[in-house]
Length: 294
Ligand SMILES: [Fe+2]
Image 1 (cartoon, helix red, strand yellow):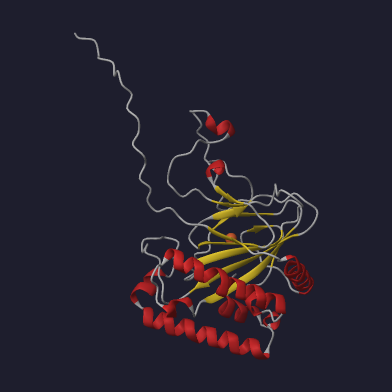
Image 2: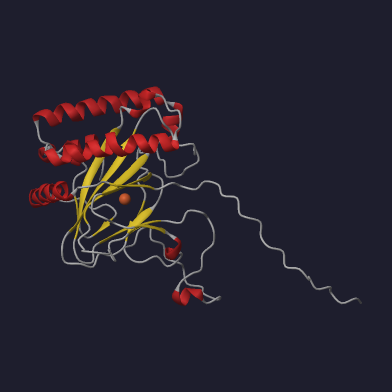
């Protein structure tokens, strides 16, 4: 019997073809020191007077999702930075040739986060409802110089297998692999492949709402403050009708007229009510109905 011939040449891989790369946009706003000090004051004052929500945050204070309605001047400035400054550039980059009308009419839901020592955020996305883009603004990263904790990390969604960590690296591991989804802690797999955005005061980050992310434990004494945003617009849809996270996707695909009318009525009711009663004082069921959240 002939010996198995050896392969003399080890061919090199062709360059991989990339598909579905998810963009993460960043914009560093200049001269934000004063604005950030004012935002910090506004947020900490609000924190003293309103209860926080429990969402993906592990510890820390997560404001009600009504930041966009706060009447304070620095809040208005930040909303303009988001809607007039960053969003149009992201639209131009991702939807070249989008008609002028699609740059206006975005609806925003927003909230503030305040983290103290050891607070973090478990893995989550912002797909609820019809959110399309989500954003973060860093008011105060809490640490001077290079930021080493409280890092925002976006999950590697390439589908490429990554090595397990620690004991999990042994080939015969049989214990279940924990996931980040419902736990506060470090990822058991692939964390080093996740994309990290360096938190810097004045930086705005925008990403598709479908992209999971988390915040590593914060390890400093000064309170870390960020603002988060969700953006929706009836003129856009995500070209992924199979996305299992989009709970209302079927309704939005098949009954758009009804859904649009409902969204418009809800927006009018919310804005009208906010004119006469501050959102802080709305009863919980009204808040849930008009502002979302739990
Ligand atoms: Fe988030």
